[in-house]
Length: 364
Image (cartoon, rainbow, N blue to C red; front, side, top):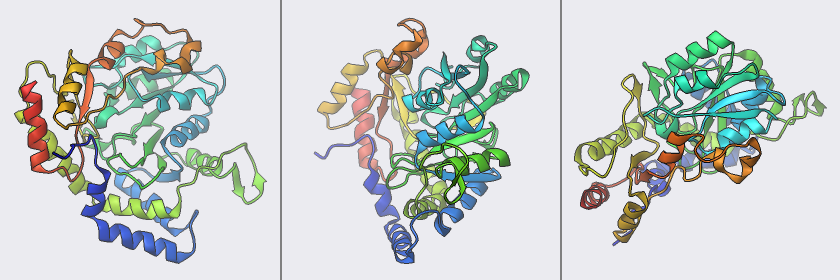
């Protein structure tokens, strides 16, 4: 019996194989591979799709977040509030600028909790970074209100929320800057590392365009100590194909999630809640179980892979020991890190594969 992987990247390639191959060959034959027409076209198309004035393609999602932190002017000692239940890249972007990450708790939808944000604000707080985890937007209305009240910048980590909406408006368009990863496993994924930022602020756009290119607007004239973080032409061309099919790919994932919601019936398993005013794009389908490790082993015996997003909260990682957090400081974040389990969810997942996952979950 073939193993059901947590994610299958080859399936979505074969769904649109001819278009991907045409885009790659077109770019290869052009003779222009960095900072060319494919990137310009993708930036225009992605900004239009998201509903932002500007998009800047960069090397990966972490670079997008780091450049966003630099663009808003974070400096050493500034504090940035970020949720505790996130991938460490969100936090690395903050500390990479010399700023201090301050962790807040999530709400029942896994997004940062507004009351926890408010309680973490000090006179050193300069920004809030929200993470639209697993594909569902956070409580943006209240977070935006808090940021306005305290004159804080708002960065949206949209690495997992391509196309997710809050009150009908795309995630990434509520803050000062929205940051996206196009890592291959994302809902809109490249075939290597890739990322982008979106913003309506022309000053932020221009600064990020300069910083991504060695801190240079004009070749060999370096205004700042920038980095090399450019979305290459081949990835841009391939992402343009993904973008054309974003709606149908989302609808396919929604159908799979619908089956899980309707047919998984096991009192030991807690299905993810849906925020009423938000559209979930199901980058991951994350369940919770008090006997998480036993469940994962049970599924593995039946040829079904799972993954934990994420087993060690950043505040308890060795990398951030210097911040002085200890176990028990973020009880909800820590408890959920021992319960969450991502089950198979990918474009091209067959009905038979879905059946096997559902039957195994119900049999536990």
